[in-house]
Image (cartoon, rainbow, N blue to C red):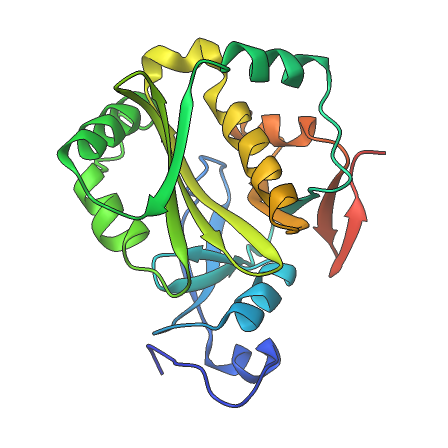
Length: 242
């Protein structure tokens, strides 16, 4: 069954029998075969989507998935409690370094400016993957099952970075972030998370989901610098900062 829509059940257990497994090359470059357990949905209400996030699921377009790789458990779902987070010295420096940026949040909108920036980011970050900005926007970003917004970061008129974010009443899901490779000295990924944490605090949203922490992947390791952070291990969210 595909393109499931929301019924009367409010538990993800109702939907799990419809999920199916797909084995692929590891998208993070690890030597093990990756296995996605996934299903497509038409839409998901706020509370149910939050339950999937709490259970460690992620979203790619209208697909909800988790990693069930048979010989690897390196993908650790990570979230931060916006009310408990305290920035460290380096994160405070990142905030000051980016104090000249303007931030705007609104509905997802595809523009030539964003496609060009996303394209440069993908070319620099994944030069051999054959990814395209049009493909990311068409099948990943714009094809959503929940309330999704864009956060734009600008230096004057120049677009520095764009975050794709799902927002519910009690959770925030960081879907993707791309930025100008020439602005990497600003630590834009760190600044984006700091802004999302502040966004959560202002709106009484505690749980900020950051996807996976994979310590073996350098580009994803920085997430564990946000403390305290919590990792989903054996079905339980535990403090991973200790």
